[in-house]
Each structure stands twice: as C-alpha cells, then as structure tokens.
Length: 238
Image 1 (cartoon, rainbow, N blue to C red):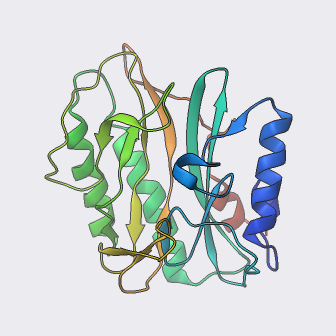
Image 2 (cartoon, rainbow, N blue to C red; image 1 turned 90 degrees about the vertical axis):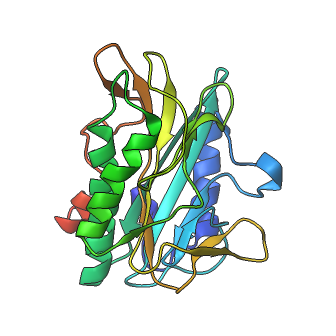
C-alpha cells in the first residue's frame, strides 16, 4: 500500500484500493460500519493522531500519513498501521516517525509470559521523552481476536492502571501514538478524528502480537521485518 501514498493522491482513493484489495483476498475491512465508521481504513495526516476518515484532500509534499488497516478473515481480526512520508519531509517529522517506531519496538522487546500489560507504557514513554516527544494517553492498544476490540487495554504511557498479565495464547496490539508537542488531544465534530490539541504532528506504528511460551510472535510483520518509512529514507520508495 505504501506505493499508493504519494504527492497528489487522496486518502479516499487509498481507501478504495484498501477496500478492493481486502475483498479480493476473501477478507472484510473491519473498520467499515464499525460503530458507523464510514470507510474501510483510517488515514491520519499530520496532526491527526488516529481514526482519520479518508477524504478528497490531495496529499501535499512533506505530509506524513498513518495508514491503519484491519482485516477480518475466517472469524478473526488482525490490525496494523504504519506512518509514511509524502515526498521530502522536514527533520522534525523524520525524528517523530523514527521515535514512534522505536517506542513500539521498545515495548515489543519486553513482551513475554508473566509481564504486566501496564508495564509496557514506561518503556514507550522513555523513548518518546528521550527524543523530545510525548505520548497520547486517550487511546491504547487492545486485545483482538474474534472481536475487533476487547480486553486487555494496553496503555502506552508510564504509571497507568491497566490490569492483566501476559500469558501464552494472548493476542493484542501495541500502537503508541507519539506527538511532537503536547500529549493532549481533541476530537473533531465527526466524533472520530482525534487530533493533537496544539496542532503539532503525530505518528504511530502498530502490530498484532501473539504471546508464546518463550516470548512473542508478530502476526502482522512484513516479510522483511522493516517498516516502509525506512525504505523511503533510503530512497527506495520516494
């Protein structure tokens, strides 16, 4: 899908491509009509933290775009997202996106049986703060399997009060939303689009994980294990 995010493309067109690709694979796009959400994926641009609704605005040079896709197949959901660049972006945006990815991986490295879900947030927050960023608190990772969203909640900030201990067989997402400015957010009148309160940019990465007897299996990983933005930084997708 990264090849369809380019200067002048609209998120409406990206949504159409996601929808058709999902149906062609005998899957269903989980977001479509989920609590009246009107599209097949979420596209969150620049200051949009999450749940952006695809529209007809053309993407501009220097934008950052998070593409969040969830598919339902044979009775189960799987959820992932990545943030990508549109053309050449400024250094702050590069730092933000790298920090968002690094914060996810810091949490991933801690996943194994016996770990408390609440403890992941401190590893995420440390990476964010060390890089001059903040962590959104309103939205969190979640359990996922036959239901799109279910227990446990997986907050991404330190000193949270989430309950639960990881056990083999647990399936859940980690999806830290990292901001250049304040951690605080506000909601647009559409009751879906969450944006940073100060209008500064936000980035996010997400995967779906299975806890195993010895650690973790990333169920939604790319075959090469790399996020697309790294390919973009190396000039492979620009």
